[in-house]
Length: 256
Image 1 (cartoon, helix red, strand yellow):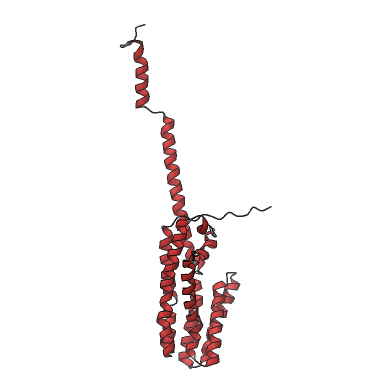
Image 2 (cartoon, helix red, strand yellow):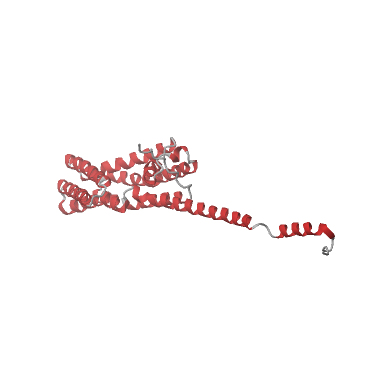
C-alpha cells in the first residue's frame, strides 16, 4: 500500500492538526455547564435580594399596621373639633383602636401593631383627660418619635443597626448579617441612618406646635405625618437592600 505524501510521519502531524482544530466536545460542554451554573447562582442571589427587600413592609406591619396606628389620632382631632370635649375625643380614639384589635383577633392576624396603637392611644388619652389639655393626647407619640430616632442612631453607632435587628428574623438570616455578611451589615447601617433622618423630621416639626397649644394644626399635621414618612423610609430601605448582598440563612438546630 502506498504511503501518503510525506511518508510515515505525515499521519501523526495530521492527527495533531485535527485535534487542535476540533477540541473535544466534553470541554465545550464543561464550559457551558459552568456558565449555566454562574447564571443560575446570579439569578438565585438576585431573587434572594429582592425577597429580603420585599420583606420590609411585612416587618413593619404593612399599610394595614400603619393605618391602625394613624386613624385613632384622626378620630381624636375630628371628635374634639365636633364636641370640644377632651374625654369624648379620647374615648373615641380608644374605641377605634380596640375595634382594630378585635378585627385582627377575629381574622387570626397578628395584633402586635394594633395593640401598640391601643397602648399609645390609651396613654395619650389618659394624660389628656387628666390634664384637660387636648394637645397632651399627642405627647406620648411625640416622645416616642424622639426616643425611636435616638435609639436608631445609637444602634447604628454601636454596629447593631435596628433595621437589621427588625428584618433579620423576617428574612430568616437572624444575626448572620452581623458576623458573616459584612456587606449586609453595611446596608442595614445605611438604612438605619436613613430612618434616623426621616423619622427625626416629625418631632422637629411637631414639638414646636405642641408648645404653642394649637391643637387643630398639631392634630392634622400629626395625622398627615403618620404614613408618608414611614412609606418613604421603607422605600429607601428597599432600594438599599436591592443592591446589598443576599441574606445568609441562619442554621436551624436539628430536631432530635
